[in-house]
Image (cartoon, rainbow, N blue to C red; front, side, top):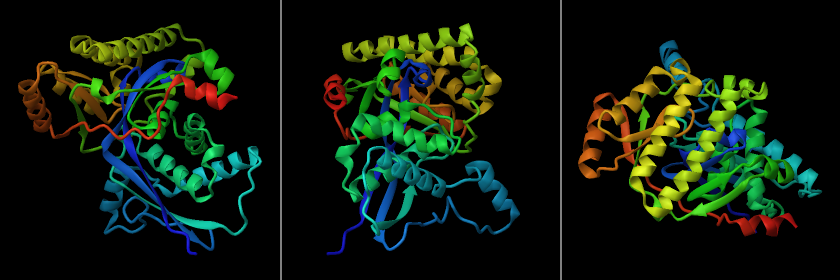
Length: 356
């Protein structure tokens, strides 16, 4: 019997509160963004092979001007490197678990994505996560990889490529829906993962995604902060505690329907980040998106490391109309946020079950 193709779709990610403290033993609330997704297809084949994407891995251009434009907007690397990295890490993880993969059972991987590049929406990790899902299903080993461990495997593939990242993105892309994450240091060091809890998407108000049509690289945003953190910088430590407190307070605000508190916390999240990183690092375009939102009284913060913001209009539809008009006038794209489907239930009991 011929084995059918395996297909996995993983949505983009939006950090709502607490980021970027996920890399610094903090707390975050993040959601799966159904507006955009990456799709990976695994086709059984005689060899392990990877199909270049015509757009993102293309090697032909009409002229040098097109080449420069594409590189400026999308960078030098496409998605093939991501697929190769997760395949390598998957094999190593199987070896660590003493899982023998059947000889000669090979595959071809291909991918599609409509997640805007360099927009802080975790397009790279969506591709990696979808590829991992395909591999787990193809080899029938999903039960050997507890759900709460999979974000670490996705992250390890990206770290293999030198991508600066934290666990938040991978957690919500594995679990789907809306997830509260606690990366408390003692728990992380003891278990290698945080405490993850799914929240009811119904607690969220209507949110708006605003992103730049002309993307810019967001990878440099974390670099200096990481070095300062490792040196024990008191300002960085205090900021990460503040981010974590914002996420904790934000969970309470969501669950009690306190929209005014949510708006304040979103603004506080951005203001704390701005003080910590500085305007030069955050970038003129990113700051202009925030200013557009705040010019109509909306609360706003980065969804990730830059390139996109999440905005909330506590005053309702009239304010939302003004938000769209202000942002579109500046050339930004504005879309209403749709929450991705919850794939797995993240609860405290999950961890106790899987740890024994």
